[in-house]
Structure formats: structure tokens, C-alpha cells
Length: 222
Length: 219
Image 1 (cartoon, one colour):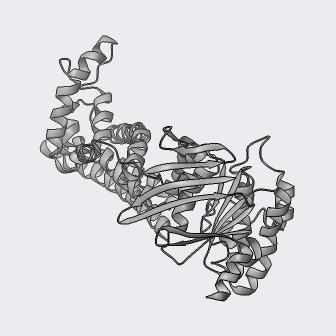
Image 2: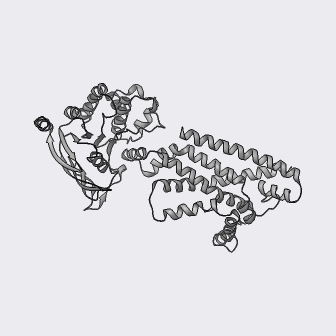
């Protein structure tokens, strides 16, 4: 269970978000500038809310009331930013192993097998295609043994045919590793295929939290 | 022969000065590039002072600090370390004069590193120290190295601060530039010219290397 109840100020932009997510996959859906990435950043510890609390599975990551604010490296939250940010001075293998914690991390062979990146291990990250970079970035986040995976626009950087090919990998991560996923999207199809719950965001506010079926009914009705 | 001894001594001192300032300069450069802390602007200004102050004035400050009655000199004397008018003063003067160049170049390098890399490394469980050593420093390395070469080149040519805090003691503290000045003053033009050629060659090579390093970074 992911519990977020925060108020975060960023210049003139104010984000107020109170969400409880029990589903294994949730999409943050809304137009650009709605505050989707800001929520991911807050969960990962990259931005500090003015007040509120963030907890994953009962583990408090942030609480202004209790004076808790775990630094990002103690949160165990895997984060794949939109630009994936693979470390350019390391090959694929070293990227994947960067966050490995013995005893916590999944087996490297399993992760690279699942994402089908086993042939890329010795490649330089600058030589990878868009889809390959995306998968390596997901693999790198998984290898840190996270209790939650955050994906910012996981399919935005890749073209439509490639999306069809990447989605199954994300579905596998969801089903096989049983790690909850929260991802940002502004693409309705993407939301349909991966998310169980959709959080609608606009102008720094949560508009609705819907089961994915309701979300699509609502969309059709509009 | 005098020429080679002076050259060797100067190069050794410049290398020592560069190595001495490298670790603190890199840390300060990173702090200035990445952290907001009270007194940041002050630190920035103080470090850049040797760049704009007359070197002789910087030398005088060092002399007052490290002299036997100076705040630092007194402490050092207690443990039997004499700085002023020894080779250590040469290294000190070179280090302080090279520091701003190194900090500024390294800082620009750290600022060029995409902060997302550091943020992602943190979410992967890396501590700030590990992020610095495995992400920030390797990615900024060409600039750090370029800055070090610049500081080294500056150290080689150091004159004003050195003459005040270390003097011009033949065989003990006399560096290339001080020797050039002394030879030229006393009419020994051949020696002065020889040293001039040597120092030009070294400075040229160092600057050429520094530029190449910084350019490769930008490419």
C-alpha cells in the first residue's frame, strides 16, 4: 500500500495530493505540468514537501508531523526518470550492478532474462537504442531491490511500434517480481494496458482515483 | 648545472603544490557547484582573491600567517616545522596562487554533470560520498584534470608571492621565474634566455594539454 498525503510548493506551483493506492500498478494520468513528476520526485525523496506524509507498506519515508525525511538513498524506491539517465561512463553491466545490495537484490540473470537485455551487458550505454535504454534503466532500478518502482513516462521516448514491445516487459516486472509500480503517463492506451488504478491529476490537484475500467467508461462518456 | 637544477626544483614544487591543493579544491568546487550553504558567496570570493590581488600582496599575507609570529606559523613552529624562506614556502605560494584556477575549472565541470545522474544514483541506494566518487567525480574528471594542469602551469610561473614568502635563495628556494628575474637584473642574459626558453616550453605544453582536456569534455 502506498500512502501519499502531501502539500508541495515549487515556485508559484502548489501541489496537493492525497492518495492511497492498494493496487499493484497505478498510473498518474494528466496533462503536462499537472504535477505528476513532482509526485514521483516526492516519493523518491528528490523533492521535499512542505508538509504531509509518505509511506510505503507502512514504512514512513516522510512525515512532517513526526519529523521524518529519509534521504533518497535510504528509501529503497526504484526510479526511472523520463530521460532514463543511464550512467554514461559505465557499460550496461556496471549500470545494472550499481545499486545492487547483496541479500536484497534479485538475481542479475533473472532480471536481464526477464527484460531480454542479456546480450547487451558489455555494451556502452551510448550505443543502445531507445527501447534498450529504457529496459536497461528499468533493470538497473530493479537490481537495487526496491519496494516500489517509479516510472516517469516510460514509453514517451520510444515510438509507437516499440511501445508494443516494451509494455510486455513492464507487465512481466509487475507479475513476476511483484513489485508495485507507479508510473506517469499522458497516453490513454498505455494506461489501459498496465494500470489497475488511474489517478487523474490536473493543475496540482487530484481530480479522481479510478479503477481502470471506470476510468475508461468515464473517458468514453466525456 | 644550475639551469637543470632550477628547472627540476621548480617543476617538483609545482607538482607538489598541485597535488596539495587538488583534494581540497575538488571538494570545494563540488560544494560550490552543488550545495547551498551559509557563507557560500564568501568562500567563493576568498578563494578567487589570489586571482585578482597583486601576487606580492598575497605573498605578504602568507608571510604574516606563516611567519614565526603568524597565527599558523606559531603552531607549526611548535611541531618543529619552518615554512617561511624554505622550499615549503615555495610550494605554499604556488598552491595558493593555483587554487582559484583549479576550483573554478573543476566547479564548471561539476556543474556540467546532469544532476539526474546523481539523483538516480541516490535512489539506487548510493550515499552522497559514493555518488561523489562514482558519478560526479568521474564525469567531471576531464575538467578537474584540466584545472589541475592550469594550476600547475600557474605554479610554474609564480613569482610575486614566492619572492615575498620564500625569497630567492640559490639552491634552496630559487625558482625558474625568480631566477630569470635575478639573471636579467644582474646582466647574465644568456642564462636568463635559457631559463626563459625552458619555462616557455613547459608552460606551453601544460596549457596545450589543459585545453585539449577541457575541449574533449565539451565535445
